[in-house]
Image (cartoon, rainbow, N blue to C red; front, side, top):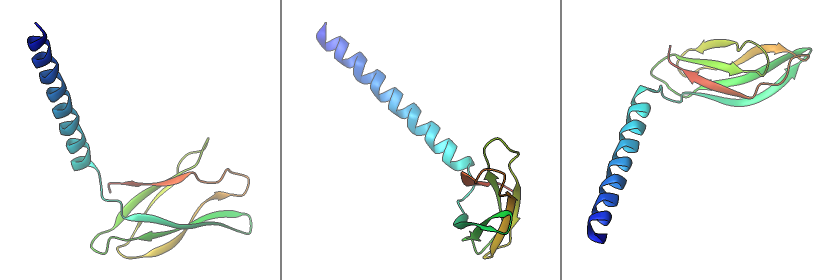
Length: 103
């Protein structure tokens, strides 16, 4: 009885790990490369900016600046470019992070 229980538990553990590995591979295949990187956040006058760099030298990259309780501004960067992107005024909250998105 113990031998049968051990075999069943081993089979369940193997199938569960195989399912997790397959799901993570599928999620990684559908995601876009992480090309847009934040260099710094800063204020200029009454505006909030984020300096972004496109680390992919072969293609244009798209991004979304995530700001809490506001619509998230989005944009695109040409290949290999660095740009100051205005995402709001000083009365809006500071951006949490920048998310890479497929174009």
